[in-house]
Amino acid sequence: MALAVREDSMSVEPPLAGLKVLEFLGLGPGPFAGMMLADLGADVLAIARPGVARPALAGNRPVLELDLKSAEGRATALRLAERADVLVEGFRPGVLDRAGLSPEAVHARNPALIYARMTGWGQHGPLASRAGHDINYIGLTGALHHAARRGAIPTPSANLLGDFGGGGMYLVASILAAVHGGRGQVLDVAIVDGTSYLTAMLHEYRTRGTWSDEAGTNRLDTGAPFYDVYACADGGYVAIGALEPQFFAALVELLELAPDWTTRRDDPGEWPKLRAEIEQAVRRRSRAEWTVLAEGVDACLTPVLSLGEAAEHPHLTARGTFAPASGERDGWRPVLPGPRAGASRSAEAALTRWCSGADHDTGAADNG
Image (cartoon, rainbow, N blue to C red; front, side, top):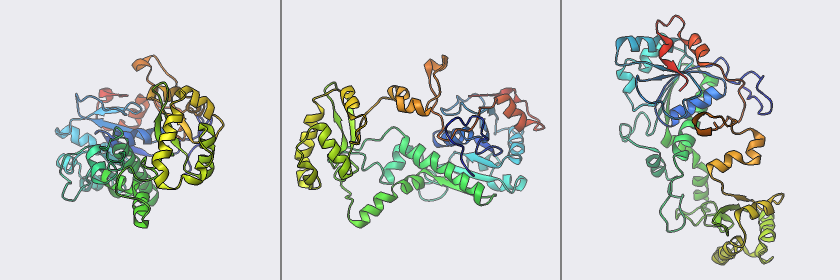
């Protein structure tokens, strides 16, 4: 299934056009996957409990309130599942089963349905019934351990790594694989599995003996001074990732370091001195000055931007990464998907496609 190109693709058929996804709204990775599938053109209908505040990331698809504790709500959900290609749920194991919406019950109505279950710990295992959040999942999988400088406390990067990287992205990949490889599957998608998969390279390096379990001592976890963040004269920061020799040579020239560092940099014994010299050099100028000086130079030096600054950066603006600002929600600018999926469709039209003949009042739905 080919993806649409980014540039001027609003008239191109969305890559997931025709795929009907019934999403039972939860938190974090489930809504992220629902948002991504909808942005890629899938016809996603989200189901929410009545009176519950909409989670983040549910604004690009219609939301229908259903009380799954009532016979009417369960019956409507089953009728909607009959029309779906994919069902996505992100509750603890057993929640939808107790509501009469188990994979067996749904497959009795729709044998081809892909039933995707998104949890933190998975559907089985000693921790399956335990509560948890991103920080717990990435902690258990070893991913959080290396988010630290040597001797420092690990610092999570919001909930990006577990919920969205190891969770939502992994869920979308699993669903698309099932769509391509065979319908009627039940997918047990766990954040601990997806996050562990993200650490595959580090496990391979560790087996080779080129990665240490001591955080902050490796090339990619701030152990190397040429892969780290440095403070500028104005209190801003720049990120440096000059791993390859040619990029490091450009960095040496940009920072006006001693030229012989190009032959000394791979000796870990020299790293404390190199780090001190890079720190001293970066502090001589402001973040804005370094940004200008680094333009057109392959020194792998970039500014560390805030979320607000990132949305206005010329490169991301040129790529159309963010939607234009609007007067709604204090100028909030949604992040757009990489492959453009065509013009957005109205909630009313989506509800007509989903609920026609489903014996349910569609007036309880909105666009999040």
